[in-house]
Image 1: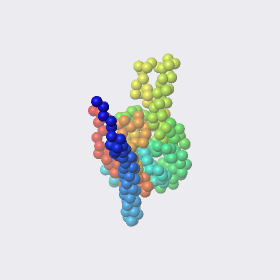
Image 2: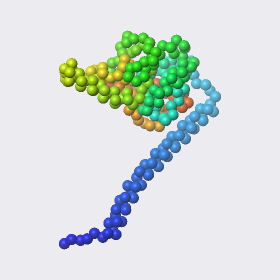
Image 3: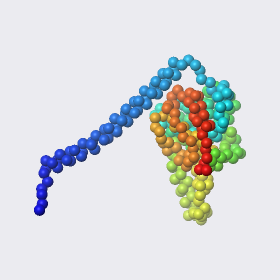
Image 4: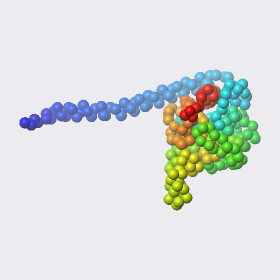
Length: 281
């Protein structure tokens, strides 16, 4: 015994199914725009409140008492910017404050490579910093991506480790400019190099381990892995930042790069100083 389906009921059922499928992407878009608007309003209120404040914040070199509160400092701090517009003036402030606080390695990252493209403007803004003396500013080694430098100073003289891996420090102070191509792409290139060595009989497959992979990575070559990654902007995401090098990295968040203050960075350093890193022990 067969029963024919009611065409009116079938049409009503298909319409009731299609309606939620149509509304779901609209709802997601609405939530996204509401969240973006709230974040923009919060950032604007914060900036306005800072504008009203006439008190000048001291920089690390002028506030040794605040640095004395830190029981430890990172040997390498990284900043990943997710904002569409990158303020090179504020980025230069973060670099100068980090170096003045005694952090010798700084990495600056954005997904699309805007920081790399604007490195001339960034370096000019850094050289104009008053919180660092001229000798310190000249001693910085600027690196663009896979180990390249702009004004190389020093050599691979000192070995340092932070638990993530072992790296050699080029000179006394390093600033590395990174983008998404220095993350997963660098791991892919390292894997291809290792595969090529195996196929040529230069290396046995059993000899490929963590150390072998790290020796073939180009991003931040000669620098220790970051102790701290500071994600700046509305996106609570690493945005493809060097996945191999941040396996044991402390991750913190800043609301915005625009009008960033020393107190924002100091808050991150205080949190890092108070944390206990056991590295799986």
